[in-house]
Length: 392
Image (spheres, rainbow, N blue to C red):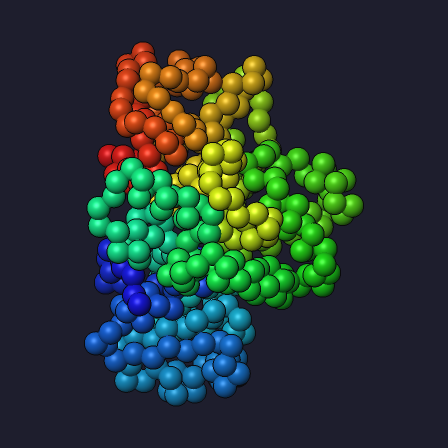
């Protein structure tokens, strides 16, 4: 079953401008399904670099590879092309020959100097994440929502995440099995293989430690001490998991270094379902799951392609997220329950300091509405309205 993805419009635009388009994002987020839908009706082929015949010919003779696989095709998909030898220089050659290629990767390794640095001006990069709430509702064929339906949908989406196969599979037990299989594939195999990590047991323990640290400030020395690992190993593991689209580090927002003390990033998971599987925690409701809901809102903001930071001062004032849209700053506070008119002191401090035109309070349960604080419009909203609200 194909579910329409929100990136389609952007993808079609860049695919009309560039011969090379790179689709990046977590493994099993739906990149293959999406691309196969896009090349329906075109002369096309899909080449996987897990296939030794494909990889060997690419590695040994790019002109033979071109003749074997690209001749007569309107467009060719190269899946996980970063595993090919000298992929950057060879893709540059093919692009300069006018070949139309869509390339995929589940690792940011492709974004580094080995591949995409060779393709500046020749390639556009589009990120495809796991299902957003909007895509989740589309997959579930929910066209109209009541407060009860929306609350139940957000709970399930936050608890089991947005991996397409997990979303369309019915039954908590089966969803849990799929997520645990994903851990085995992504954390213990993909990450370890791509980043040459030999101590799988250590990586597994580290992942579990992070699953209980979501939404917290990362103090690297403390993590190293808690885990009994070297500082360098902690950095290596974090980099590997982030470049594999499993976690994200959120940097602090500041303009006044004397007042704003935070320097270390906060840690969040890209998909809350995978986080819950690593933590072996699948709550039956979100009533006491403030950190999980905060991570969930972060994930939804990430899927909108927004630059997300957080704010903290020496006086302990803190705002969960700060969105920077081309110089326009929007503070976002996350609450399990919220009521119009009740705004935390920290949010008021941010409004006083930065004079934003709009601030947002995102709630799991509450009543939508607005109020005004010193010329700033404070919007109280549920998660489903974030795409519309932040597109304004």
